Length: 157
Image 1 (cartoon, rainbow, N blue to C red):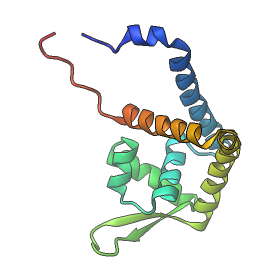
Image 2: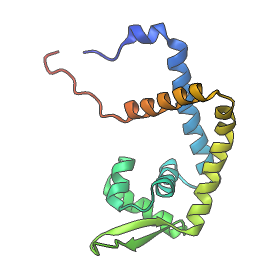
Image 3: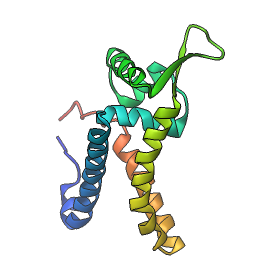
Image 4: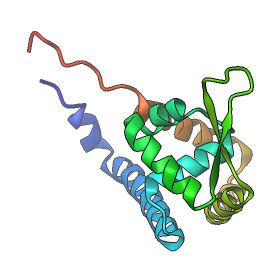
């Protein structure tokens, strides 16, 4: 059973560690922001998803969050109770709901995302355009790689 290319990781430990530390720093930032607003990390991810990607159905949110529909309903009930989201009828299919941010939800998540951007954008602004493009490409590829389904283990091993 192969668990990744450990030889390659050993050749670049500072790079692998730096990326790991960046991911952890992002998680800590989100956790601190959630605590300040009395929200879980999953709730913040939900608000950010609605802010950045627009209204979604409960099942779309469940898939994005990788949680059950029951957990999604509980989360949406809490966010609606706090006045951060609203359930609206789907414009084309009345059997479905669309989840939208309220003005309070937009204000809350926009402030958190702005605080995140204020920390990162000045760093990016210091990079020459070709290096900035390369870093952006790497980050986008790393995101896709980390979100990809786990490869199936070889049944013959």
